[in-house]
Structure formats: structure tokens, C-alpha cells
Amino acid sequence: MSLPSRLRRPEYTGENRCWPCTVVNAVVVVVASALLGVVSPPLGVLALLAGSALVALRGYVVPYTPTVAPRLIARLPVDVGDRFGHARPERADGGRTSESLVDEEVDGDELIRRLVDAGVVTADESGDLFLADDVRRSWEAGMRRLRDVSDAELAASTASAAPFPAEGRVEGDGDWVVVTRTAVAEEDRDDAETVAGAGGDEVWLSRAHAVADTAAVAAIGDRVDPLTAAQAATPIRLFLESCPVCGGAVEETVVKNCCGGTVGVYDKPETPVLACADCDELLYEF
Image (cartoon, rainbow, N blue to C red; front, side):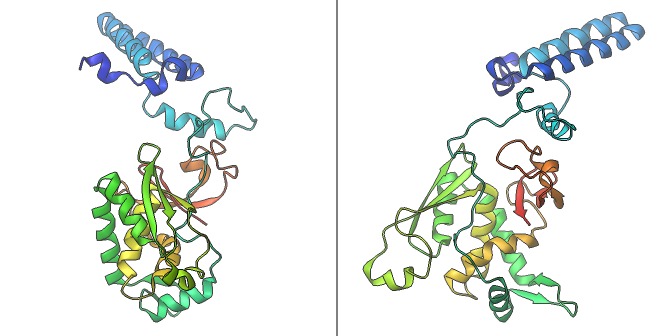
């Protein structure tokens, strides 16, 4: 593969090119080249040619322009809409947000009681909750393993974590794991009625949520029943210290700081969340 082919970023060029960003990057290249040219004219010319080539091939030369630009736009005091071309493209998933393994209302106090009784979480004198050390070790080991498995294996593992018969598949270039409930066997019908949904229902999980929740169910599955394990998988993400998909540090922030503000499916940029400081993956919405 030629060097231009390796440098080219079609997602930011051609029809996908953001022209305001291109203009800003071109100005940066011209100014930087002019400053270098004062010191060394040949160096200035070289910088101009190299910078222009990068803008042409990649759409930008200033690092992280596609990531930073939406955030800057979200902070503007006026609504610029999609005039800067940074609205997220339409997706096959319809622009949905991640769901949970069990899509039903859960009594939070009762769930915590069950987890405390099972030794999954502990509480200190002030009432603050902590994940049991052995559960955390098992959970984090499971996430590290699932982080590197194939799409097919992750989909199958996530489906097996559901508290009902299910099949799994991956959508959106690996960004989503879809769990589809299969037909319920007659002998299991009474138990299945305690879980919302019927055959054919789908649950969409982001890859990060699928990794975290599947590993959580595996870590506590020998302490609680399958339904409780699946119900607990989402709140257990509150205890994440590293990103399920990249291993980066987890921090408390707001949507506008990790997901481009009002860009995409999130229309409340001040929503507090847990997100990865390295890859901006949204891990838990408070």
C-alpha cells in the first residue's frame, strides 16, 4: 500500500469533508509555514507542502480535529446546527443509546439488599457501597479477556449472560452487540414470565456495556440467581475503574465532555456520566 493510501482518511475527506475545519487547518498550515520560513525558507516551503498534503489526504492536520471540533461547537452560545458537518451520520441502529440486559423496572433497594446478602457488595459505616475485592478481581479479569475476543465470541458470551434463551450478533462494525430473545420452551414458560419480553425481543448494548455486563454476570453468577445477576450488571458499572474496551482510566464527567455535547442521540449535554478519559466511551449515565 502506498504512503498516500495509508495516510488517506475517507471518513473526513470527499463528501465527508468538513470545509470549515479544512479552512481552519489550512490557515494553521500557512501561518506555521510562514513562521518557519522566517527562520529557514526551505523549511517553510517543506512545511507548507507537507501540511497541505495532510489536509488534502486526511481532512485536517491539527491533531484530534474531528474529536475536538464537535465539543467546541457544542460550547458555542448559539445553535449552529449541522452547518459545520459534525452531526453524527445516520446509523443502521437508528441512533439508539445502549440498553440493559434486562429491560424492566428494578427495585433498587431490593436489588442492593440481595447483592449485600450475597457478598457482592459491602457497605461501610457511612452507607457507601463497595464492590467486594474478589468480585472485582473476577470482573476485571473477565473484561480483560472479553476485550480481545472475536465479535462472534463476544456476541455468544453476551447472549449467554441474559437470563432467558437468547442469540447474539454484532452490528455497526463491532460497535453494538444485539441480544435477541429466542422462543421460550414450554417447560420454561412460567419462569420466563418473570422477565419482561417475549421471543424476538432485542436488546442493544454498546460494545463497552456488553463487555462490562457479560463479565459482571460471570463474576457474580455463582452467588445470585441469573435474573438478579443480569439486573445487577448495569449498576455494577458504577464501580468501573478502567474502560472495558481500551483499559483507559474512568472519570466522572458530563455528556458534552465525552460525546460531543448535543451532537448525536444525546440532547442533554449536562447529563452526568462515567466515561473513559482515553477513548471517550460512555460507560454509565447517572
